[in-house]
Length: 410
Image (cartoon, rainbow, N blue to C red; front, side, top):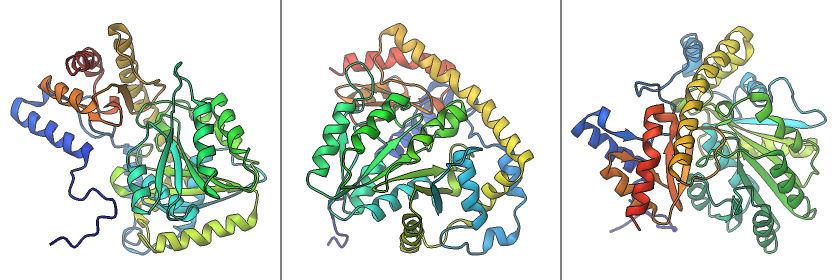
């Protein structure tokens, strides 16, 4: 007898990422860590394969009181945290002439969940790119929504503006509202970063629908490991001053930039010229949060608030982060250099944790790579590798092996 309702779920199927990761761990136990390349892990590891944790963040953790750990936090989040995340997102350039409000969420995932639930209705279609973080689709499905996709890259490897506009038009022809998810900079899974021209094209398309309600959610999970912080935040200015029927939302995560993966700390922020819409955002987020996780992780909020309130501690965090960014960047550079050398086609890559290789048979290629003791994630029509979790030497080894695996799987 089965009690759980199917509701279009795939019940009992193992998570693909953790399934392949488990296989990698089994192989390591059999033949030794030095003989296996595990490129499944979406976290930053050091050269010895250990999780990178910023010592400056740990300094803040160690300074927490018992109340910081044990007391309930308000539903929206600690007031000092709600202000701190605005600084974390906008740095020293907060938007002018615009109401910015925020709400705690358990990681960026919670922000995505709340955005879909609050700003669409059951049965709605939401829009993101064909290459995307697979939980977008799972979250939408659990909430009774459907993910529709546009083609992210055109034949030249640039943002496919025509595909985006066509997909948006098709959705708004049959419904009065939608949510668009854009993951930039350092997009997961490709490592692509939207350019100024990409944003102009996207917003031009969105502005063609003044009679529709459009929530535009920007997932900035990898912002702090995408390169220059000021440059990569320049797009935020384009979201300021949009008409009221377009609601920019930001999904902030402390997982990567503050190495607080397990503390599940994030936020959803809104930007609007309307005080009424800003108040509505806070009201609906109270309900969304109360109906899902209720109170958030007070200790995690206290850590972020403490860091952003202490210029000296923040400077330490930024210096440590820069050090690890300088470790990460050569890994991506090495993979891309070797890919060009051996003629392996990849999706456009600018920065971040992941690189994706398009192929016709991702599952077959993934299994063939395991014969070479390389473990990577089949994702959509391609294979995702994690330069964040691999050394420069490993990143130089993988491209030729992947090219061979693609050829052998045909």
